[in-house]
Length: 468
Image (cartoon, rainbow, N blue to C red):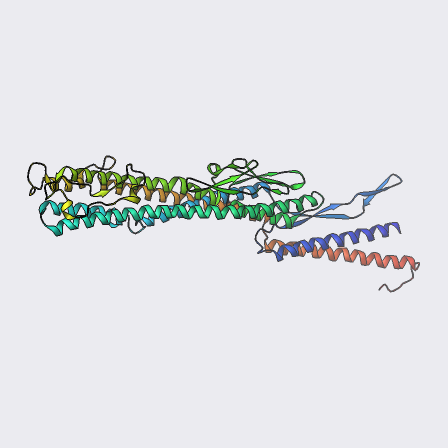
């Protein structure tokens, strides 16, 4: 009877274990398309054997434990690739917008077809025409019109750069609020997970936490440290704590020189310069490095070209016999010149076409003004050459950013594939497992049925009886 009782417990244990395995497999199938879901498997373990009178018997049953198929190294690699890919994509978007603002495209990269390039060419073409007919009022007016067009084109480019910078500022501030939402969620999940660990597998809660960390990684570069009872501590790349156990330390923002700054940690400190990954890192790189470099180059073009034209006009004599005045209004230094340059001359008569001492009908200074088109007036090169070189550098920067983003996205895809190969659900694998567990369940049920028949026979002293 003792052996039959053991068989009963063995079969019941097997039925319960197979039932749990079937339920875990069913959960996998049901959640195949659930974002962030981690496949669950059931680990079977033989229970302790029973020792009676020095004789060790067979195991008394089987115990099971549900285990999520999770590799923390793969999860962290996916998290890191998400950070770099998102930062790269954000920077590329900002650079592509700047490229479009200057009139560059994949179809055309010719400086002469852009607003600024065309305006430079038009200004010197009008000055060339002036040198052949300096007394013609219409020709003189055309010079001022071309100068105004150039100033407007430079103003527009500067305004576009400033607008892009302001847009990035807004994105950074919005993203900081999103970070606080995710860190609060992660801290709450931390508390729930540590309450269950290590006695239970908190698979569903861990899936939610890991998905929140992945979404956080798309915004900010974070480091992840595992603590006791499966708790996590999250810090920024510079070490500022975001989440410690069940406590979330929110980000805040401040303003420095008109730009949004990120403040974090306890005590709070400005961590903006430490951020490299995620949307915030990419936006900071574009706002603080790429766009200022573009603005500085356009400021140099506006200031040097305007200064050269003003100086040459001042060297000549107007039709009234007075010295030439400034054609362009410029700031004292190159900083901000592209945004503020304007036409100072109010009348075509302000153009000084004659050289000093040759009379008002002279054309020497008009020729000198026209020759500025081929003179090295901007950073040791011509204005057109400088702008063409600027556009070339911008195109190269965008191309490099595009190639970098392509590589980052490929690395992210590879990391996601590696993670899914372990943690993702394959319907073929689940179908095979379901068949295996079903057959095992049927076998255990058959054993229980046989034991039931044997019990009935034993209780009836071998007399045939019907077992219901």
